[in-house]
Image 1 (cartoon, rainbow, N blue to C red):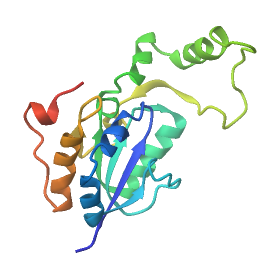
Image 2 (tube, one colour):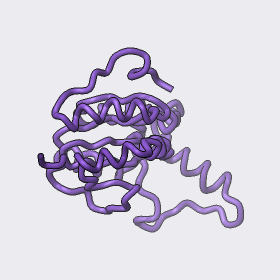
Image 3 (cartoon, rainbow, N blue to C red):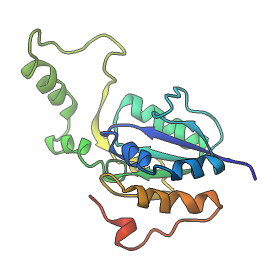
Length: 183
């Protein structure tokens, strides 16, 4: 049996979903029998590869870098999982949307000028801070999502229940409180 190519990605979020992924503990040894981890911040693989079978995307789409990456991920991935509440609803990163349009400038000014300690200044050299989008988006508002895995973060048991059937070519059963509860 060929191993599936599995990727995980961390966009605008706290990395809590990846911490829960690591909480799979000994099951990770079972996972690598059936899946090759081809991209992940855990493995520090920089370039997103071609022909990925399954990708878990943590975090919302908040900046140009996130936007570019999520399109690359969708183009190169067969089955995309919106991984955690930030990916599913924009959650905490999306709170800046309540500030209305043009909130990117307000956020930068607050963070770098008003709260700057020693030499308050806006970052202006390219590549220092990716350009913020005017609003934060959950993943499904930007690209097609194949499975929603809510939770802040989803528990290791929920992650396992979502991934294990995929290893056998089956769809996970996403119903009941244990699988679809937010928060």
